[in-house]
Length: 323
Image 1 (cartoon, rainbow, N blue to C red):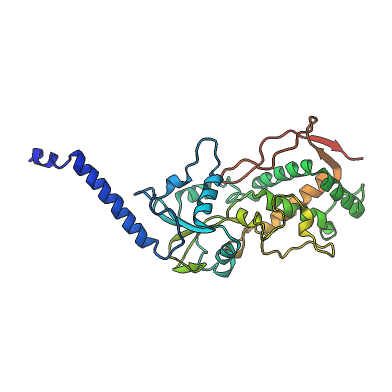
Image 2 (tube, rainbow, N blue to C red):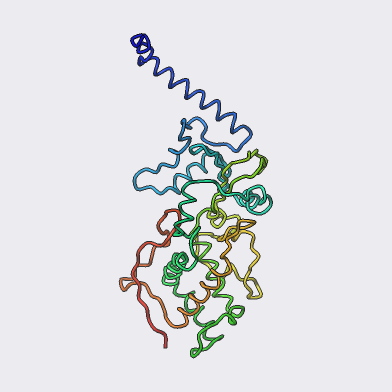
């Protein structure tokens, strides 16, 4: 009997079984992803799905792999990772539809084990306390103000006019310092500490840009794609705080394309606290000091280091106390 059973485990039979499983997997996924946004269906494998699509060659960034998917499938695409169906929204209209227009449909959070662990650990900017987490933003400020000396001088002139040299700027000065506010906004836009919003999870069957999105689908809005979209921002790669100031010299606070804290029902709960902390940090540091690049004149690289969040690469700094 054992001999008879072993006869079935030939190389040919095992090969046929693997082919059968691959074909079955393709048929199941074609059915599951019917009428959903396009994506890499033929490269999906059993158990892991399209996980290999995110594998980056040595020295390449994961964002480059995402750009490849975007170039191939457009601004809205879907794929499978493990047992999860995932939809990536890269364009302004789709991101707003997820975060604002149909926020009730996309109000859930995916039950990733890593999310649970991250929440308990509380060490990441997405889940942790805003004091330690916003060190990432403060580092971005130091990187930016050293590189753009002319903007730094304009801010200092505005600070001197408002509070003078003998008084530290306070929260009451906030409305009178539009350039400080605009600089914070521009660094948040260009820095993109969180390239994407935290993954959302559909609580019911819904649609996105006309495509079907079934219940229990992970949806990832790409905030960086909105912040770097030429149709939303003129010359988006350029650091220009004045883009956030209108013709009357007031800060533009209602821009629908400015989403560093996400939007809708799942907007960052600490947005107000973070903005106040960043205002105090930037205004008071520039009130007392001028930040300069290192003596060899090499300016810092604003590309940063990619991970779950982005943060500046190590840099040297010169600090000059103002008179």
